[in-house]
Amino acid sequence: MVRAVVPGTFDPIHYGHIDIIQRATNLFDDVIVAVYDRPLKSLLFSPQKRIELVEQAFPDEPKISVMGFSGLTVEFCQKIGAQVIVRGLRVFSDFEYEFRMGLANHRLAPTIETISLITNEDHTFLSSSTVREIASLGGDVSSMVPVHVKKALNKRFGELGDGQQIVPTTSMRD
Image (cartoon, rainbow, N blue to C red; front, side):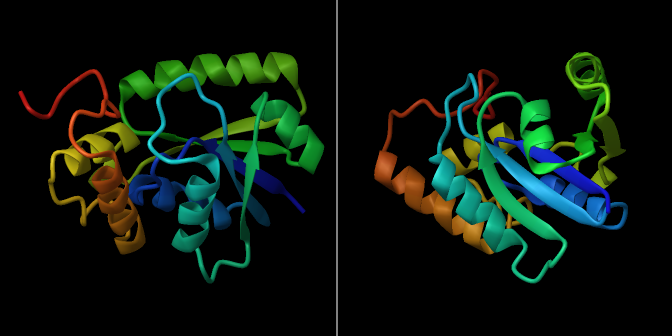
């Protein structure tokens, strides 16, 4: 049995993530979506809420399970017996970042392989930060995220009110 881990912050999960995760189920016996709890960036949702949103995206997928983690991804993989890390590639800049991360992970844990899947061309523009910013400005993200995520975004931005900075450094306002 080959177990794969798809790690990320998933703040929030979007259709690009969902596509990569579902395609990973065609390649591996068991796919763990690993929700990282403490990235070095501002988060909109708590770790538990992000796990919940990811779980709701895959209600009837027996090969997919969702777990939270902290620390190094390769250490998490070793702990749960995963042999593969799956990452998605959207654009050329993703390749450079993922290439460096893959080499570092291989140095730390040579028995864990990194596999990169190229995103569906419909999702090349998608990132969680883009989704957050559009939602924060009242834009329609229904073509980017499942309904339950759109509702969670609307609720969260309603709770935060105006003036909160949970958006990327580039701006859709310009």
